[in-house]
Structure formats: structure tokens, C-alpha cells
Length: 450
Ligand SMILES: Cc1cc2nc3c(=O)[nH]c(=O)nc-3n(C[C@H](O)[C@H](O)[C@H](O)COP(=O)(O)O)c2cc1C
Image 1: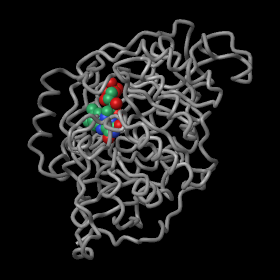
Image 2: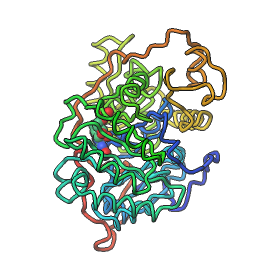
Image 3: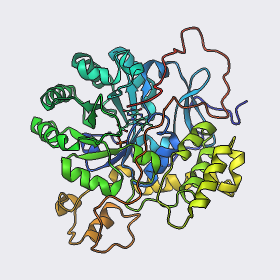
């Protein structure tokens, strides 16, 4: 039995109304984004990333057919929107992230991609096409990185999405580099002709492993090329960025308009802040568990996400940390984590997240290096880094001196991607019986992503 009855309509506790202006390519510029990550890009991770500085967040890739027959249900207490299949939630979201949320589709079919986008468009601000996943389950069916060598199909999907989506839904693509720069530029030119407003480039080729260094130096020419097309399309760098401070380095090397972070965000969802949380076992972990329980996030998914956390240790001894990890490893459900969490006040966590997002809208946070920001852009005379930082990050910068560091923070982790799979069903969800035949397709969401 579900802990709470769900409504297919909308939450009876409406959030404070947010300005729902449409995303333009400008919104994709000067930002630091949470990358699409199957499993690791779960709702609580996205919410903490937004609370701690991410400008926008991408949801995990969902294969087109997987969402088509999902039943949309709204939790009347939390407002969480679940797209439920027969035996599991395919995808969950919350209205507070909508203005900053991009939904990523895996597809090899323009028609299905459009249907999938229509299914979720009321809950998102943009649709992104995954053109980078190199895993066989994806490429065998022509999706992901297979699209890189089938530009006709790739572009037909993007064109169809742009044509079918209302103006307020942005369309973007995430690609990998091709082995040759010339071929990459040719592909980029074609993609830029489809009406997209942003292009993310994961700076590895299809055959490169994530352990190998991303070839970010190849991006500069691509950025200049796209700018030369004069369409205002934003180019987003992806690959090996460690966090907010490091994003400045990446922008300086690549000239990219924005930076997208995957594994460092998985290891520490607060890395988007100029003051990322340290001692995660004591800071983020309890909050994450409280929030996840309140949102009814599937326990196994929550456990998976928190076991990926790896922030710097300052006040916590190694032995303490090992003990916490052991407790987590043995935990069979939220109730076994009380010692780690203390009082169960997940509702307060959610309130704080909503307040932070609403009072300091993530989309307005701007990544500006001293070199690239002009006073005119920022609308005021800014003579010192401290003054600049206080404008860029008004809620988190209370005092700041001239000595702002532009180096990669120490102790940031870049772990190997874990094997991933589709999100699990929320704990409270129980199937209300099978859907009619053929209505819940078996197409899997990826088990391992790009
Ligand atoms: C656990 C995990 C899941 C991922 N899932 C997706 C996905 O659903 N869609 C996608 O385009 N890329 C996916 N990726 C790739 C990342 O978005 C990103 O391109 C890659 O990790 C390189 O960025 P990084 O160096 O910041 O980690 C995934 C990566 C990881 C580690």
C-alpha cells in the first residue's frame, strides 16, 4: 500500500509561484550544470545541487519508450511528481526544480522522441537528446553515441523535437568528440542547424574511457566555430571539471559558455558552490537521508547515491568515517540510519531547499571569471573580486577578500562511474495491477551511461 494516496492532477500544496519564462540560449551561458547521470542524478541530488549553486540540472537519460506509458502521479504532501511504470517509478521530479530542469531523452526515432517529450513537458523546462552514450545497449538500437555517426537521424530527431515542442521548452543535445576535429566541426555545424539553443560537448571520444583525461583543449575551436555561425547557441563543456572554482579554469582553457559536471557532482552534490560542504558524513549525509525519506525516494537508490559521496575530511577522523560507511553498508532501510540522521525532519530540509531556490533563483547564478565579466554585464562597478563574488553569489558570499583562489580545490574526487540502472520504485509505490498489454514497453533505461 502506498503510504500516501497520489493524485494525477496537481499538488494541493502549491509552491510559491515561480516565474516561468522560457529558457533561451542565454540561460545556458555562464552557468555550472549538474550533468545527466543515470541513477546518480536522482531527485534529492538534483535538489541539493540546485541549493548549493548549480545553475541548472539535467535529469538522467530515460529511453523514449520507457516513459510513454508511465502514469503521472503527484504526492499530495510533498508535491513529488512520479512517472510510474508497472513495477517501478521511471522518473521522479518536484515542481521547485522545473524552471531549472532539463529532461534527457535516449532515442533513435524522431516520432518516439517527440512522444516522450510531450509526456513530460509539463514538468520540465527543456529537452536534451543523448548523443554520447557508448554502451552497446544504447548503440545497438541506434541511440546514444551511434547517433554521432548517423547525423541524418540525429538531426531529424532534434528538428522534430524543436518543431513539436512549444516555444517555452528548449531543445539541446549532448555529444562526444569525434576522433577527427574536422568531422566534429562538420557534425556540430549540422546540429546547430536544427534549432537547438545549447550543445554540450563531452570532451572524450566514443572509445575513450572516463579514466582518460578529457581533451578539453579541443573545445576552443568548436566554441569559436559555433560562435562564428552567429546563432547565439551556447556551448557547454563537459569532462573532468571538479567544481565551481575549477569551472573557471575550464572556461578559460576552452572558452565554453558554461561547464557541466558529472562525477564530481555525484561525489559531492554541493561542489557547485564556491564553498562546497566538507565533512560530508556530518553535513550532507544526514540532510540527504532526511530529505530522501521525506520525498519517499526509493531506499536502494538513496543508499547508492550516499555511498558515492566523497568530500574532503576536516574535522572527521578516518576511523569515524569508516564507521559511518559500515553503518550505511549494513542499513536495510531509512529506519536503520537513525543514528546517522538524528531527528527526522525531512520536511524542514525541503523547506530550506525551496526557500533557497526561490530567494536565489539558480538560473540567475552566473559563473563569471574576472577576465570575462564586464561591469556593464553585471550592472555595477566592481573593482574587487570580493565585490564581484558578492554579486555572483549574493547568498553565500558574506565576506570575501582580494585573495580569491582560482585553483582546483584539494580533495575533490573523480571516481570511476559505477554501473548504473534505472531509478527504483519509491518505497510507497505498489502497482495497481498491470497496465493493458503493450502499454508498458520493456525498453530498458540504460544500465550504464556515457
Ligand atoms: C553514474 C553516471 C551516469 C551517467 N549517466 C548519463 C546519462 O544518463 N546521460 C548522459 O548523457 N551521460 C551520462 N553520464 C556521463 C556524464 O554525464 C558525463 O558526460 C561524464 O561522466 C563526463 O563528465 P565528468 O568528467 O564530469 O564525470 C553518466 C556518468 C556517470 C558517472
